[in-house]
Image (cartoon, rainbow, N blue to C red; front, side):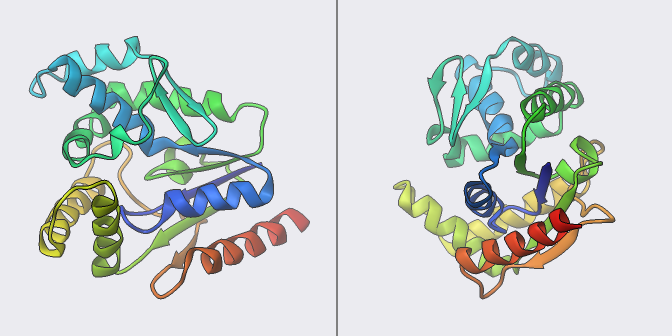
Length: 217
């Protein structure tokens, strides 16, 4: 069984998907981390962002794998490194590159082969797994999402203001919604869940109940 969780940045997708997978005994796949890994590798190798073919070639050369809750790049655990503001700022180049997306979609589908999976991202229910048994679209208000991102940055030792995070978030939302390939959108058969005012346990409990209802059917 495949469960997809899509939604904008800061809606809580990764945390909720990871917790839901644990409760159900499913595997968890953080697809956003895969794009971040490509971006990190590009930063390290000095890829010219104005030459998308360079990024596409690099993506095909990389060994990106998921080991539990960790993301490995050529065997190196980069789970924390890919969450930096520097990597966040350039991940869009990987996400907007058609060849990179095609390559990572193949990897994501390979990860799902023969197993029960909870996967999260921007286009999991619309593009990667359109036939998924259960689809969710998580949302939250802009300020709530920005506050969550600010807490994450502060926990990583980075300094930022709420206004700066809101500005960055707004630009990212526009970019995600207007991509020519894999744009952020709710699948027509996805259940939309607004996480404003809810803690993680409450959100996960709601989704778990919906999943069991679907499984019982």
